[in-house]
Length: 360
Ligand code: DAH
Image 1 (tube, rainbow, N blue to C red):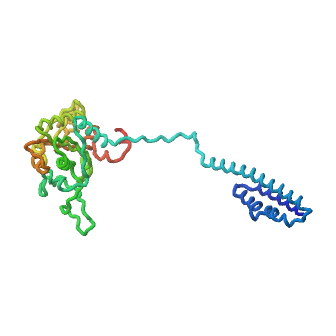
Image 2 (cartoon, rainbow, N blue to C red):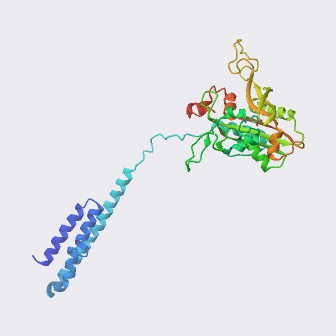
């Protein structure tokens, strides 16, 4: 076959292959095979020198025509394939915009945080500031500086989790460790009195831990808000007025409060504060005469412990009880949240049941 015919045949064959290529990758293979360094058409271009003189013009022309035809066919086919591949890709990742959207669940603050903030706001409104302490505490601050030495019987009411250094071989026996998960926020009192000169007006919210089994009215981990006032001339009347003010702010203006004598190691005298029952209006019975179950017929609900700061506690902190006096109080946040919203079981606050939590 004459060279010119060979080239024409190669052109026809290549154009057919270009037509048949069904992907940009296959097309590229065709291109390399024809126009690449070792390509068939490239071979003809390279060997022009060995073509007899009289044929050179017509062979050269044929090769150029073939190259132009192949190149423009490649370009056209490449564009078609690229467009098809792009559409396929788009179709693949298509989103059906007519589907109904999935609504975002809007979160809300947990009731425990909300009540904590509400109480903090009440106190900040009358000039208190917010202090914080460590959940992992020394025995000294949790008990001793609060007038509760190691052999004190009040320790038995607040057994806790001791933190033991496991790096040595020491066995974890209660009483062998001085580090514990605090049982009460009262330790913040001791820290603040060490660090701050009176006048002191603080509250301290935070988590506390006790070796208790969870039941409707107990949790092994819960939140407290501590309060401490140290100033000149602070009296039991100031304590009573403060508690009454707080209860009216949190539960409503119609609530009454009372103090009952009690015992705490770090206050003298000590009291428990009750707020009048919101379910029976403090009467102890319902409109039909039934005994009120919320307050067990007493008309009162206990909400916190309080008292005048014991002079021994001042002594630990280096404050002169002849110059200063003060009061302190401590309340359970979960308990107050449940009382405010008539929740019958503290554990419901922690169950994570959205049907319950969403109500607040
Ligand atoms: N820390 C006490 C408790 O956890 C509550 C308490 C009682 C705190 C009397 C006080 C207080 O500051 O004065 O049971």
